[in-house]
Image 1 (cartoon, rainbow, N blue to C red):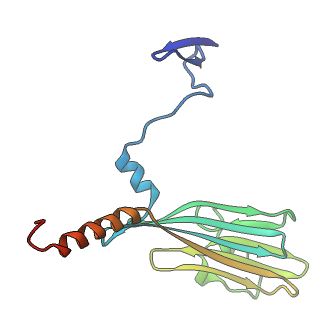
Image 2: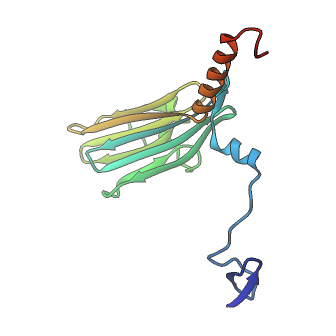
Image 3: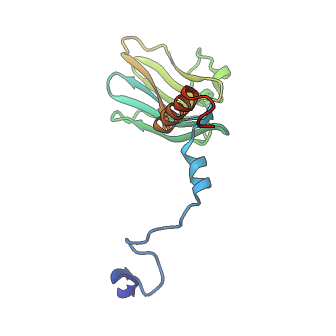
Length: 186
């Protein structure tokens, strides 16, 4: 390791081979590009950001969580995680290389859900599939099971954030003052 002096007497360490070290600050992203990654909409001057978290819990052990941002250009899947201490669940759907129809047992027909993402679990009690599908038109979370005695908990949490409410209130107050004195402040 060699030290490099930079303006402002800050010290950074860099490897002599030119590789990035732990203090590397990465590439700067332009503000416009960064805004498009955040998600959200501008409706009537109000800036709104939408997100959703879909959670399916099976027998208080196996958990599937999907996090998404909803943007004007579509749905951005932030993450999909499967927590499975039993070791018997499998992820399915686009991006996994496995379709739900590849893992369904005989007598269970899920061909209409082949494009959905989620997980399957097959144990001594039977078959269970938890599926999440998020589009511009709908947020769907469903469970298909033939397993008896299975405890299933489903949650969909939708977050809406208005980021410029203070600015909008100030604009309304300014307009109210201007309207209160017609002719004087125009």
